[in-house]
Length: 141
Image (tube, rainbow, N blue to C red; front, side, top):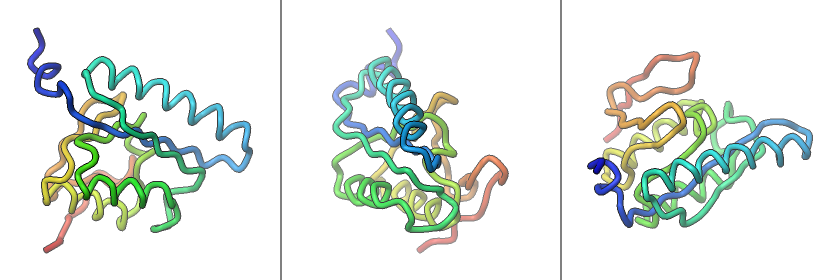
């Protein structure tokens, strides 16, 4: 049996989906497709999905996604062990959000981010910001 599946048994996760389309129909369709893929990943890894967060905003500006901010607070409080998102660019794409996630990793509040691209366990020295940027230093205390 795969050790990864046993290691994750009874672990809690949340799903994050984002679509930056201004059209409500596109938002509903694209976020539902992301959520369906994330639920399959959670089931495959035997993770319990405790909540789903969705935003319909561009991630370029910091603090522009209210449900992302709520998710971060709940991760910090220990409600979730993992975050599952379709692709990393759905989760973050600006320096501020990257640093917030980096802090959660350093504090031990968050384990790997799981995506369709695979598991992502960053060190704070090479935390990606978005597909167009390879990495950035995470200088936090």
